[in-house]
Image 1 (spheres, rainbow, N blue to C red):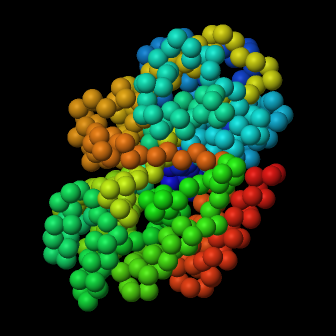
Image 2 (image 1 turned 135 degrees about the vertical axis):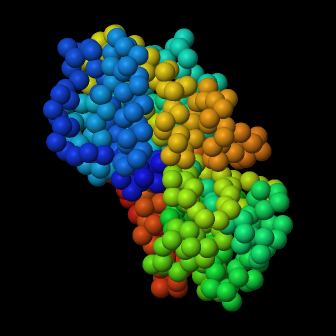
Length: 416
């Protein structure tokens, strides 16, 4: 879902995201007088939006004192309207559903309120959620976000092709870049690829951390102009040059579904397509540089409170908390798209436990490797990575020089 957030995703972030502008202001006022409704803005689109609506409707059918209304819109519209309404104080939503990496950005603009006072003595506490997801909602030790679902960049693989070209590689459930290269060498003559780079920043983020990279320098400033970034793109460039990587412009998902791609890094949300494959497939972590240093990046969308100059009644505030508490154990419909819950209450749900993506949280070793990124400024870096990655991979742009430019752009945008 975080990818959809970033393209709508995504995150997105993450990374959320439907609908149109019409209706965004209709019935949208959140003044003190409208105590019977909580207005939630989101960026969720497609099947995810339908699942979210079904979930919200299910909550309203429990006859809560304060019901919930969700309005969805495209990401650009969402961002523009949220910034505008927050400044004007008119038609402000009560809650905005955002990607984890967006929390520090919105907070720095001064448009968010903390949950700190509202959640004291409630079920909304750190031990009720995956630690990484809970931490992703924090800024300066205050809780600005309550975690929702987790859309994660994982990897699907063709079991038949693994058995044919790199037997035993998946016996431990982890695919390394060394194994991907070995598979590529064996399968190349048959016109089969071993790796894809369909969403560059996701692959970059994971490999960067696996190689030991740090997002900030000693002073806490964003720092990506370094040898680790260069090493990441040198590896990706090599995979492309030797013909193991799906070329830019070709659709990885089509190649995978047609049995022409062995390992496909993709989002958990791609489950709706992969589940219809005619071959035996599996889902695992993103490919690893060093299996002894597992890193699995994830998004963890957050519900944030938007400042309202008119304030909110005690009844509405209690209603917001009640809704967040209810979501802890009632996200099953949303999870069917392939995302994971962030609330521990869902982990023992038998239907969720049978879902292929549940390995991320059910397997202790992998769960400990999950990292939810909300580093200030990284969203700017990732936007540039998406735009420039293929130029570095194909040799159209020099890697070191490009990363220097990306570093400067991120620094400049953080000053605005």
